[in-house]
Image (cartoon, rainbow, N blue to C red; front, side):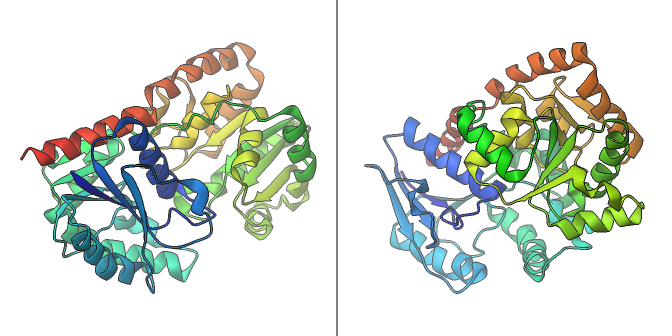
Length: 377
C-alpha cells in the first residue's frame, strides 16, 4: 500500500498535543512496518531532525500560504501525485475533496462545544475553531474510518456529529519511552536553580483555554499554600499577568512568589520538572485523553485529576480524583496526595503500572490494522 500521513506541523519547534501524537505514531510505524510505502506530508519549519526518512518512509515538505490552503489545495494535489491508496489526516481536519480513501484521527469535538468557543485568547484560535466547526461535520461523512482516542470521546463524537458507532474506532494514545527516565542529577539541579524552584513543588501544565481549569487550580493551590509554606507551584506555558489577575480577584497577590512561571519548556526541562515534582495537578474540565497523567505516573508522581471526561479512563484507580468545579475538593485532594504517605505510596505503585497499558507500539499496531482492513475492502 501507498499510505500518506498528514503531519503538517511536525517540524515546528514548539510542538503541542496533536503534533506529538503524530510524531510518536510515525516513529512507531517505522519500527513495526517495513512492507508498506509511507509518505509523510509536512510544512517546512525549523525542527527537521525530529524524524528521519527510512527505506519505506519518505518525508515530503509542502509549502503553503496558510493552514487552509495547505490542507485543502496542496495536500490533495500531493495525494494524487504520489498515487496514495490511503491518506491518514492526524489532527481533526482533512481536505474536502480527496482522490483517495480517507482515515481521520478526530481527537475530540471540544471545538464544537459552545463553552470552548468563548474567551478564546487569540484570533488564530478563534479562526481555527470556526474552521473546524464548519469543516468537520462535512468531512466525517466522507471518511472510510474515524479514529478517536478514548471511549468517552467516541460517545461525544457520535452524539455531536450524529454518526454511527461502527464507523469510529478507539485507539488510545501512548506514552513515549523517554518518560520515566530521569535526566542526570546535574541537569535536574541546573534546571531547578535556573527556574528558582526548591525541591518542594507541585507541577501544573498551564494553558489559557478555559477547559484547562487554571482559575480553580490556582485558587485551590492558594488555599493549600496558606497551610503549607514550603511548597511552590511550577506552572508551564502561562505568563505572570494571567496568574496575577486570578490572585487579584481573590485578594491574594501577596502569594505570587509561591508560583513559578516557567514559560515554554523543552523536552529535557519537562522531564526534569516531572521527575522531582511532589504532586502533579491535572484537574481539567474537558479532555479527549489526558496524556500528561500517564507521563507523570511514569515518574512515580502522585496525580490529582478530574473525575469527569476522559480522565478516569486514563488514570484508572491510580490517581486522586476530584470534582474539578470544586476548589475545596481540589485543595483537599492535593493535601492528601502530599501528606498522606500511605495513600501516596499506594497511588504511586498503581500509577507505575498504567503507562505499560498505553504504548505507542500498541497504538501503531492498531492503526496499521485499520490500513490493512481498508486495503482488503
